[in-house]
Image (cartoon, rainbow, N blue to C red; front, side, top):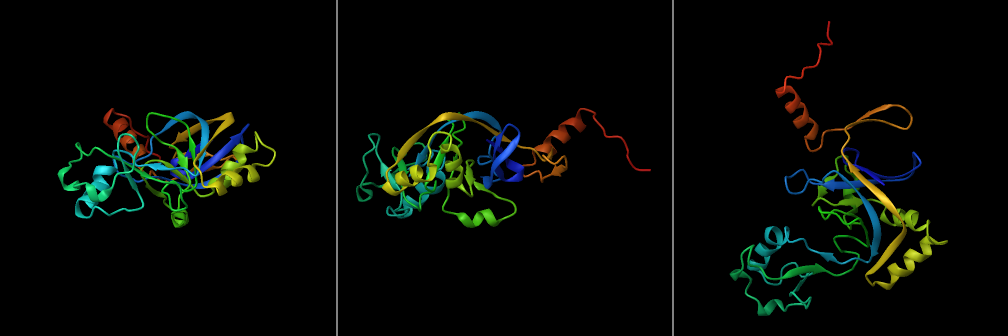
Length: 239
C-alpha cells in the first residue's frame, strides 16, 4: 500500500504493478494536522467503527462548544473513565480547562460517523490510519488537504474488497454482511500489508514519464533552503 501525499492518491502495488488506486484526502496544512511520512504494517480493519475523539481535538474544538451549550455536538457521546455515558445535564462544563477535562468523547458507528463505515489499522506512534468519510464532496477538489492527519479514501469499500480477496472467496458478501449488522467488528488480515506514506513531488511513472506535484506542505522548499544555506548552488543553465 502506497500513499503519496502530494499526489492525493492511495494505491495497492503488487510486484511493481498498481492493482488498485483511489483518491485520498490528507492532513490539513497546519502544524498539528500535517500527515507524517512513515512506513508500517496494516494488521486489521474495523467495519462500523466508533470514532474515539483524540485528546488533542477535544479542548480545541469541542470543550468551547460545551461550555456555551452542554447539548452541543449531540452526535458525540461523553464518557467517564469506565466508558459509561455521562449525562450532560449533570455536568458544569464551564469549570473545566483543557488540562482538567476528565472525560472522553466517542461517536458511535453510523453512516455519519467521522470515520465513515470502515477504517484500516496499522498501529503507529502517530495514531494515523486510513478510513472512509461521510464528506465525499472533498474528493472532487484538486488539492485535498483537509483532515486532522489521517488518510481518507474515496473508495474504501473497494479497498476493503481488494484486501479481503486474499482470504475469502466472496469479499463483497463477507464485508457487507458485517456492514449490515451495524456492529463494530474487527477483521484481522490473514496477509498483513506493508504501508508506505510518502511525500514525493517528483517521481517517474510506470510509463517512464517524469511526474511533478505541488509542494503541499512546503517540505521541499525547506530542504532546498537548508541546502542553499549550506552553500549548495545549482549551475546556471541559461545562456
